[in-house]
Length: 344
Image 1 (cartoon, helix red, strand yellow):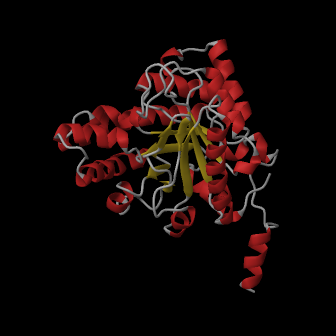
Image 2 (cartoon, rainbow, N blue to C red; image 1 turned 120 degrees about the horizontal axis):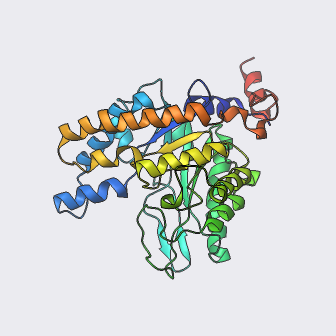
């Protein structure tokens, strides 16, 4: 398998020099807006406060990151000037306000944003989260697949990597139904694995999977466990391309355990947020204390994750999907040949 020029460049921009993904998520909206709104006693969090916190995350955490994931609502308008041009820029496209139907959730793009706009602004990759339940009614699952396929086609058309995030969630009929962006209580391993299998086809145009643990975070042991490891191994096999782990609100120790199992299964890194910065965020609105907590505890934790990643993760360009020679540029791509001829 070979890559087009734009996709190859974007994948390289997201990774470090060794081809490992050490990516920090700053695109969260409800998990940041909610606590800030509650502190101020308002229905909506003040825009400036949310944007300022995201900018603080960029300032303090980019040094340990190979790339950062920003959102168009807050992080980009307030913090884009803070992001080092040496860091990869991933832009989220899905709206945090999903449609909750009787048969499951439906994702949608942010108004007035598109793959084309992300490419024009200099983004290195497009990230999209799709809520998914493999046991939801057929029409719901097909809508989520159509949504994903449409974005994958746009990413191919504009020659930019497509980073796809999958999250299982509780249906309205499930116990402890919640719309929070947290790991689903009572999550089933078979639901996670089947979700990955449902989107593994090339028709979706996914370049990197961003995946949750197939086992509840609290149940992933510190040491090796054959049954848990088998679930991670199967997830990596089903993905069939570079993949990274998300934290879904897991604690620091829990997420470190998850990464250890994921790396044994072939993961190429992480794209995480709350596991890294949630503790200092709890000090809001003490901005000095938050900055200090990020610069000490969060940075130290990222150094731990990065050391583990360097030791055990699989460089993205060495995944079996690219063949024995690794990921390579494909100058035979028709669109590249056409553009080359135009420049004579």
